[in-house]
Image (cartoon, rainbow, N blue to C red; front, side, top):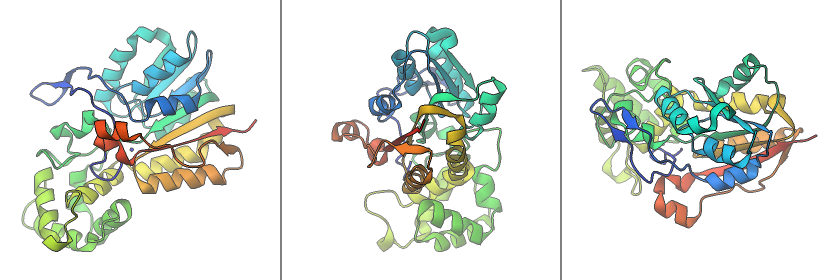
Length: 319
């Protein structure tokens, strides 16, 4: 999980080493946004069982495991196979205290049931897109480097961004851009895309960004972000069903948390944040710990501008 377009999360002190195919050859050093704040609110303790629903490169899980020694456990869920491989290498020193599944965070309940675990002490979700995905042109998340229109976190799933752009109706495209990206020029952009794909299939990020730029009159181009930012954000949300997945998790929170168990969610987009805020507030079994969302410090934002839209909310299960 943003998320405004290029506000893809995660602090990146050092870029991963990549080979010619775009895959990483060694785990990058990786510190998630709001790391200390999130783990503090999760409050892990010795003997507890915790779920990192968005394992990524393992930054949160590593911190949680360090905080619940000697016998606390973390079960990670990660739908990006490359990230899962790198995280597992990073977390090998923790032995059996760490385990992971190649699944979406929306499938946490199924995954836990298969392990014979029905209640946990804490759940953490970081809904940002990591630099592992965003900075790798072959994944198609960014228009800043040309690459295939993909945007799938889990490359086993469909449709990809290319399939949506080339196959969805003009009205459906406009709805995606407007509702997921809050793009005011959604219908104009959708019309230009449909006209262009009638000439040739739209396959690359640069081709799509060029169409978007040409669709919007120069006087309406935003000053602080690239003109294609909101459309790319909206596509990513649609491809990965991010709001649907988040809603699924929010609906089963109280079925998997123990009394006193905690849920911490970091969002990067106003749609996600509002969803978390109201689901927490409206659930009578949850007590909200954050009256206002926790946000990154000016120092963290200076180090990592992608963190600027991050918001952390937390709650615990009433006993």
